Length: 409
Image 1 (cartoon, rainbow, N blue to C red):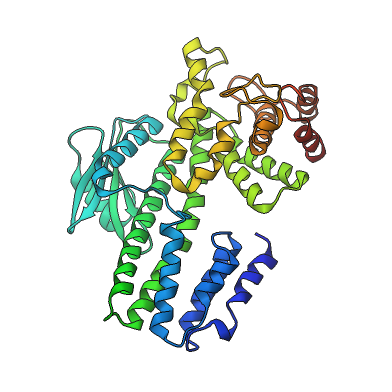
Image 2: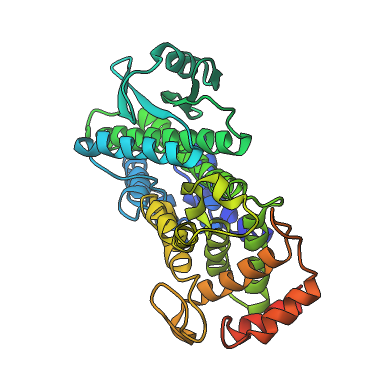
């Protein structure tokens, strides 16, 4: 984020005319709003509306809370998972099965705190070491015993634990993925609970200004935390994908970095560039659900394994569709295997009908793969890779993106 943009966001709410009764807490709230603008979470018009002063302090606080709640609840800007209570067991069981598939472990169990007790809300098998889950819940640290218990916690509190049953040592990248997922879910759930409490306070005529100020501080802090944890989750997910795919370097990160450079070379705006960057990190996300040994071959795959790898983007899109805050990158990932001449998949789109972000990621992904070591081959020299891709411009790749590649690497 450009420094001047962040400064502009802060200065908009550092003026006394936007503060309520010169309350020092208002200044902190103003700084948070400045960050929200700078990170493109809200517009300046909406932020100014939130920050407007009021003759009545309580009324002003209620208006601020309602606007902040609308950002999260209505626009789903920060939503991770959205479902009602009746769907809880099915959703968490689905998450548990996904974790088993990604990590290739024996079983997974998800516990949530309810009425001061840990309750099993999702599982892939019967029976589990509840005591180890309780230890992780209380300590807020991952516990290694007969099972591995990962705490679901945020800066405010613990909300549950994810228990992993395995007979093998779990790769560090996979464990970090589960830990980041647990923190992300816990923060999102705590934010939703805080929103529910804020709604109750704004509708209660007897609520005090001090209570409204306190819930506003909690709400803005949680939103900021959730933004950080979302980025951490995406990065850990990309690292886990690279580990599963057998890359000796961070292929996903390299692809995303190159995609960002291509966007800059092509003059794309910051919002689009950020979306393409995240799509670049996650463009091979489907590999996380495939067996690790499939990628550790000498390049000779069975027809069945080859088909699974070719279809891995569909698995990834399905996963991303269930994580709301990543939904905007789905189209770029869905069509990354299309080819400029219409010979690609899944729809056989041609030329300009392929999303521009998909065309950029396709070039970045291919170039990064060609110039990286793999288990079954050495990296190709940069000049050779560029030469090959230039020869395929207009068939596999968008010629405009290839020109940008030759000017970038």
